[in-house]
Length: 383
Image (cartoon, one colour):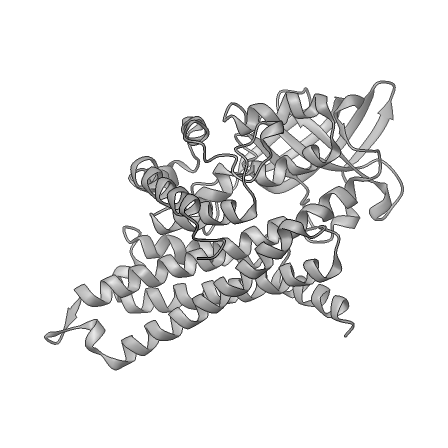
């Protein structure tokens, strides 16, 4: 027995898989065509006790730690979910932790609790047109005017931005550089806040992604998260968790793609024999298995460390970066090989492996591009 297969966690895995098969897998193709998830899914997932796994009960979460959250991710993928679905359904995992860490009881009551209960949807607004991983160069400006900040600027590639009731938004309240950034919670119906359009993407089709614009948007001062000009540090603190989560999604995607490919290879016959009878196919599957097992082992080790290690620990930051890059490379390799095993059927939208192939491409971009992660790793290693 290890921390990942205790009786309680095996029960959690089984419960999440059952929920996914009943409430998600039969509908995900339609949700991809719709371009978004129904709000009702948030209610159902919260009622089942799975929406806020890993969030403290004292702020409205379901309790548990990063291992429990990782098991839920693995189980949902294994039962027919997708990373696009998880990105949309669990956007609060990047929208609310900054608020929780700030300890602001008012913001927690107004935004965190109802979101974790499935009653609200939150998004994180950091990326801007012309800028991605360079968080220190945020251009959206917030100027103090009495009891309000007046916000002007734009955001893009905002996950759940179309449906979000509020956006935890990075704004510049001070001088240039990382020291002048703050986080403001901006409600969707605030005058001057506009959702420009829902962006069409290569993958993550059931996850709505938006362009946002702010024109003289007045936000109450009490909506600032933490201290003014401390936003960069609040954002940076959450990168470890986000990158570990993406690493978990990556190896879970690889495992699902491997399972689908192995099952298809046993069923599909060519030239009078099942595909699995071909040595080249068996070798592909072994290589897919080997890379997935390695990525899972590395990421799980980092997850276990992260539970009791400060998020600012340089060694944990390094481990999260390495785990993300390794798991992303694994997912990209495995989904490619899986589509090849499926052949023409793998290229069809009706095939689940098509979804994972499309969705996997964003994993090396979101949460810090692979190249940026390598550069950060080099600095942390002293190279």
